[in-house]
Length: 177
Ligand SMILES: CC(C)(COP(=O)(O)OP(=O)(O)OC[C@H]1O[C@@H](n2cnc3c(N)ncnc32)[C@H](O)[C@@H]1OP(=O)(O)O)[C@@H](O)C(=O)NCCC(=O)NCCS
Image 1: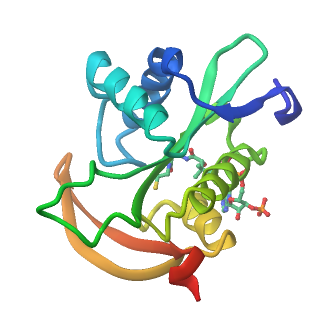
Image 2: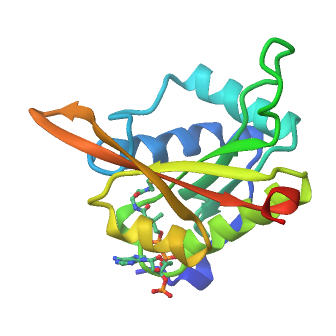
């Protein structure tokens, strides 16, 4: 087993796209933690990573000594459009760690790095959604100051089961004042 001291947390690069996608895919295929059940196609993911890097948006990865990408945290923002002013301060967070590497402080480090970056670039509100059953993620978000804003009821229907989603957000910068 690799200890978390052997894991590097760093900003993602465009050439991380394949490993980033593979990690998302492994987490998604559990069908429990995130809304997707498999990763999006590589070209789409590559374009997303390139766009995040080009716009200096927070996208952090956790990488083993063998250069395997085993975790990520990103805070995306839709491209600003003149037709939809008023939301340019809001980011949308997603994250995940490979099952073998959970519970060693890696998620917290990734999340702190992404939130620090968000603060630095002037983001003011970070939103996310989490399934009620996901106790680890809810505890992590609460530890870093995210607050519950509401509950979307029976928003997912998968494998014959409904799930609710908890809406959480963290206000930073001017919005926190
Ligand atoms: C949620 C997740 C990102 C947390 O990352 P992690 O590396 O396992 O968490 P860490 O070891 O950094 O723990 C940080 C904090 O998270 C909380 N936490 C982590 N695992 C927990 C668990 N099993 N039960 C309760 N709280 C837990 C605790 O508050 C912990 O702080 P503490 O050590 O002071 O108690 C990770 O478990 C994961 O990837 N889960 C599957 C994917 C997922 O759920 N993504 C988020 C979708 S909204």
